[in-house]
Amino acid sequence: MILIAPRRLCTILTAGLLAATLLAPGVAMAAPRTGSVPACLMHPLPLPAGGGLAWDAMFVDPAGRFIVGTGRRATDQGQEPVLVRWDGPRVTVLTRSPGLLVAVNRHGVLVGDSSTGAGNRPWRFRDGRVEWLPLPPNGIGGYVTAVNSRGDIVGFGGYLEYPVTLRWPVDRPDTVEVLEPGGLPVAILDDGTIVGEVPGEEDRSSHGPGARGPGARGAGARGAGGERGVAPPPIAWVRRPDGRVDRLTAPGAVKSTVRVARGNWAVGQVADTADGQYGQMVRWDLRTGVATPVRPGLIAMTGVNASGGLLSDSVVDHLDRRVPLRSVVSGPVNRVVAEAIADNGLVVGRAVGRQVSLPVRWSGC
Picture (tube, rainbow, N blue to C red):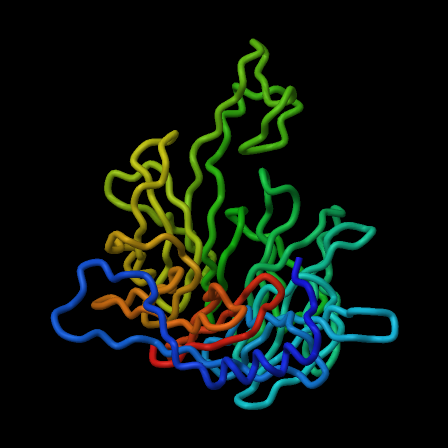
């Protein structure tokens, strides 16, 4: 939980960040190119007037214009969670936060979801107001995962062990669609392509009637002989605009998972045994389905841009080089967290300490 520091500390720390010159190297590069390698430089983002020290820059639109995040502001009733947007040098508190912020598109449309008394409910923020999105008629809750430049939104409903893929088309605002093949979508591209993953078809012969679906565990997930049913491993997939679904895999891989996608690229992991750990990070070319191993040394898959640049912890892994994020570590700030990357190489995140969380950006990535 982020604590709100006094306003005086906010002023001192912000000034310190603006003037700081101490740079610390990010993650070391694996197999660097010959010659000097540029580094992204970190810059603080302006804070809203009257705010405290709990502001996070969480997402950036693909064009690199809108940076969005969350924060807290003081009201007569105490601290209020809010949505905030940076547009160049301008910072605007948009509205009280309706819930979890998930994504933003190039037109500044925000999407997310919120836990309500009737279940989880997805929302969209545009034209200055929050709009609640419709749910399927079977009563399942809905969770948002991505929005494209058109405004089409994808997410999932149901339980994590048996989710259904949902799409809210922008040209039919009161409609929610249930799509094949089911599972958890991680991205919807501008042409309508959806990238996601789903557990394989369960072996229904080994499941009793109480089993709810792939990955089900517990007393209900047993066959007539009392043996626990075994679901096939997860499968990453890409759903084309015409509805065709292709599996994302790699030579020798038995299971695959995908975490991020943008443009022609998706990034995930594969494993050569069903019960083994994921040992290889790969970058898929969505035009061909070909998987290329990502050079070793990365520990996260935070985001990818249209050029295939993979944001991972404190480095951007491009197709031909790695660029480290340089980070200010002065004052009460003791670490930085990179959250998202735009197509122009802009990276956003936060600088954090025991009682502070401040929004930052990196340029030249």
